[in-house]
Length: 438
Image 1 (cartoon, rainbow, N blue to C red):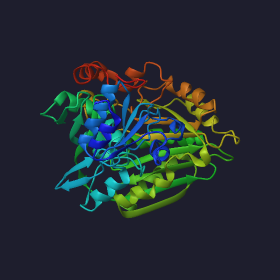
Image 2 (image 1 turned 45 degrees about the vertical axis):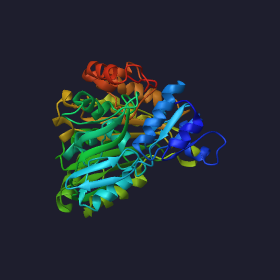
Image 3 (image 1 turned 90 degrees about the vertical axis):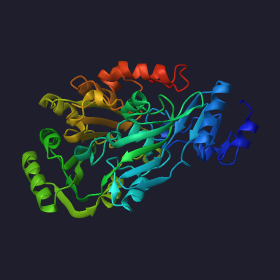
Image 4 (image 1 turned 180 degrees about the horizontal axis):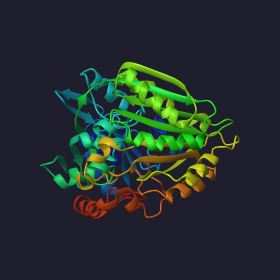
């Protein structure tokens, strides 16, 4: 099918082209860096059948096609000058017992709210508008991860539309190779995922904490955090954010499944190791859905039209003191207040899954370090290169980096050869392709 009028007549949703009233609103992804891309066509899908029609139109016209869930991809993979399949209309969440079937267009705030109504949840991120599909298919790191693993570790099935228009349900028994690949490397690679099935966990009552240092001893703080957070009890996730300024700012924040008193004791021991007392904010007895919402203000945002760039890596070993000093020094420039280092604790349940069990290859990481700055700031490349040299050379697939050397190994590690075989089997003509695709 290559006739636009015919396509429009068959859709349950609708489609927009340049000049249509809502086109300029609908075409834009969440990330400011990619909001100038002008697709030939945006299809607002309301059903799996709409996705089939959209993929068929792209195939028959030789037009690039990408799915869009939340639109937060750092590398702009949810935008194209071809056809964008906007999945936001596929956002239903149905919970039966411990199983949740979630549409690929659902956003995290909606997912958490629907699961909370059934006293359930899944380990996932904090960003309210982040799409569940992109998060889960690339791994999924969050505040419950050290207790329950990646978001993709709770994935038990998915429905996928392929380039030839066929549709398949996959799980451990049906299309098992595809199901394996979707758990950690499935974002836009093999087909369009239209729904996901998760094995949920009981929603916990948790303790929220945030430690803020007014004049942080940055090097001491990094050193103490990397020795403590990855080895802390699985029940506690403590991430660290350092922001340049005069003076720099530091906050260690996270969630604990322990009671408030036990959590305070663990945090106090960490503060003693730092050697400087922070302002401590600890609140116990919080439903996890409420705790997640409370951290939305800490999510990195593009304020005042500033376009930010990020680079990251996983680390299997602690940083040496010389590296820590260099990282801390990069945050001392008061004229560069948007520079930021984000340390994310791994370990725990993340690392108890064998590397070959899913496509996610980074099962030995202690932590992840993300460098964030305005696009024009040369610091980000200098700082990243210094850290990357002593990293595991692994990079989170959900934090794609267009400048990454040997990107295929960095994203997929020991699972790369098997993933390439799955790509050949399910998308032999490379209908689903983008820079750094398999």
